[in-house]
Amino acid sequence: MQKTMKYIVAVGVFSLLLCNGAMAAEQNTQDLAKASQNPVANLISLPIQNNTNFGIGPDDETQNILNIQPVWPFSINENWTLITRTILPVVSQPGVLTGGEGRVNGLGDTTFTGFFSPKDSGETTWGVGPVFLIPTATDDALGSDKWGAGVSLVVLKMPGKWVVGSLFSNVWSFAGSGDQDINIFTWQYFINYNLKDGWYLTSAPIITANWEASSGEKWTVPFGAGFGKIFKIGKQPLNGSAQVYYNVEKPTYGADWTLRLQLQFLFPK
Image (cartoon, rainbow, N blue to C red; front, top):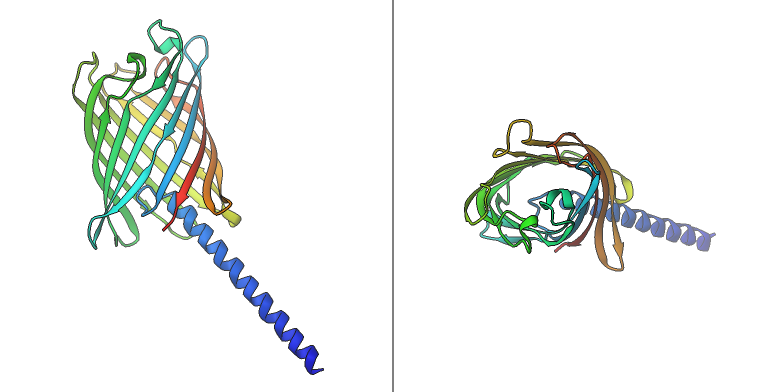
């Protein structure tokens, strides 16, 4: 009887440890998911995002943009963090957008943003800072040949299983030999709902306005959603997602819809 009681106690303790371990692992996964969805989180990451745009021009051509966008935070002092985000696009441009050159492949213009964010911002997390456009395009059809600068702002909240916020920026050109001046507004709202086992639902369309374009050609307004999951390969945590967006407003030669696939390497401290 005494041995039986010891066995029952041992099994109970073991089960409790397993349960607590599973709960802790689930909480860590949810925390990592929220951090990966927060543009100003204190988290080093490397998102590789592929956007395939369909239905461009009268011949329904396809454009592909692979964005390599490392995120690297730096602690400035006990109160502030600087979060840097670089977007390096590798572009496959269809002939309708190259001025008769046919399809052109290569590197596009680079965007660099630095968000200054308080380490203790309360319930509302925010960051603000400069954004720079760097003319790194390997072909005139892939970039503007202009230097640009502007300001970017992100505001978000993370109540319960939600991560909800908006990212705004506007860039103006100030130098370069390109023919067209740049004045582009970008608004990305993001709504994420985190489920069990690292799964989540997401909607993060990128709305843009080209203020230099003629009337009726300024806005691109997508609408859609997708899903994602936090997982590991070996010890490396990853964030994979798939999203689909339809452009309810677009320029004449804008895409009808977009398929976005992303794999994000996460490096928690």
